[in-house]
Image (cartoon, rainbow, N blue to C red):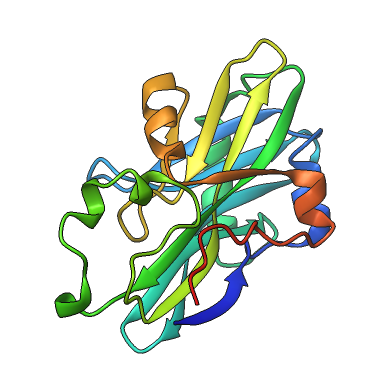
Length: 201
């Protein structure tokens, strides 16, 4: 099996750092088909941030999806800023911590796929891949915000390409956390790599 370099969130260090202290409001950008195509994160009088899906082609027929974060000074999104600000709601936390969520994606041929792998306990654990996998790749797939009162919000790539899941629903969050590992933002910014759990030579 070939282990590919971990895929990190496409964002500047400064913008990532601001997620821990500067957020004041949020706007969810729906695409009109019931999907969340992006999330606007507002930072008071500083330029806001737009969080979207970011597709990465690893090898032929192996794509992974992480997050891309760009500020609202980007010419491509500037025309939409005012409308998004009008629909903004207050940031739900007065104080919070941020974790980056890692998962591990992999490819395997149909004939090599172990029977009932998807339903196994092993498949639910972070870092596990089935025997016979061709490639694997750790992917930073989401952001978890946790208030000091324990309430949470997730911005997650989810199961569908280019379709974010943004929710504060505890049951949905718990489901999305299956098979992931949460890394504190400070550790992520220091360049820490996801834990190599379950790697089989």
